[in-house]
Amino acid sequence: MSKIIITCAVTGSIHTPTMSPHLPFTPQDIADQAVGAAEAGAAILHLHARDPDDGRPSAKAEHFMAFLPDIAARTDAVVNLTTGGSAIMTLDQRLEGPMQAEPEMCSLNMGTMNFALYPMIARYSDWRFDWEKPFLEGTDDLVFKNTPRDIAHVLTEMGQKRGARFEFECYDSGHLTMLKHFVDRGMVETPIFIQFVFGVLGGMAPEPEALTHMKRLADKYFGDAYQFSVLAAGRAQMPLATMAAGMGGHVRVGLEDSLFIARGQLANSNAEQVEKVRGLVEGLGRQVATPDEARSMLGLKGADKTAF
Image (cartoon, rainbow, N blue to C red; front, side):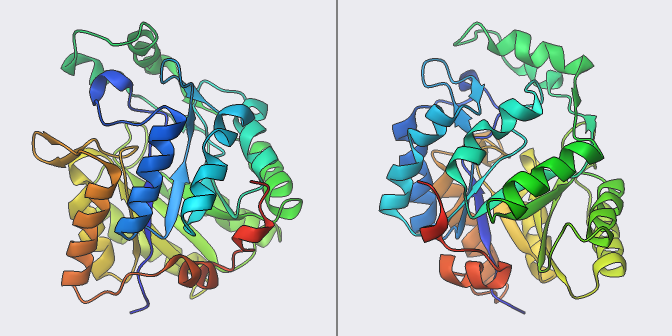
């Protein structure tokens, strides 16, 4: 098997500050936790921005640029910026930061979908900031919009014009069909890096059968022209990561995807999750890829061609 790429998703836009004191949202905390994750073995850092005053999801260029230069100065890890931002943002809002930063990689959700977070409300009663509960409550009527026109726009603006490669986030089998459509249109170049996403209410359940099904379809659609990684939300994070590693895939962990390191135990940092998954995959005989090895495997343009 090839070396395994560990991606760490440092903060995301799903969890809110009330849920964990370890969730970073200030520029310094995001930078420190990103660097710590890289030092623990993450070759790719998947990054969202937050409003530093209250932890609200943001995609403003000023919020990204408050931590990106610091990260670039302290680690050679690949920076992968979200183009999904938050489901409550418009496409133009979601792209503000990435378009200015011109990163090596971007995430790209491959379809429009329900994105329901409201079941998490029942676990909490006292909220740190007043935006958190209404934000979560509103997700029972929330659609994350990413139409074919939106996807084509991101591929053009971030890929063709700015040289980014993509982490294609596929939450369901139809997203693989959409990805194949864009490959057939000539808008996606190989090698293709697919992130199978499990555990978001609105997408696939985190079940082994779902992973094998997605792998089988991707093999059919893309042959040997793709590599896959697995992201599983919540308690399924480590079990499905281990399964992915055993199948020859890559893995993603981080506080965006799960706040926990064990049942009922909050993770103290992103680095703690990276260290745990590294031990699991190395126990299976996989070697962890360095950032430069990940760049070579995914055909990235290089850190010197970014704008931060």
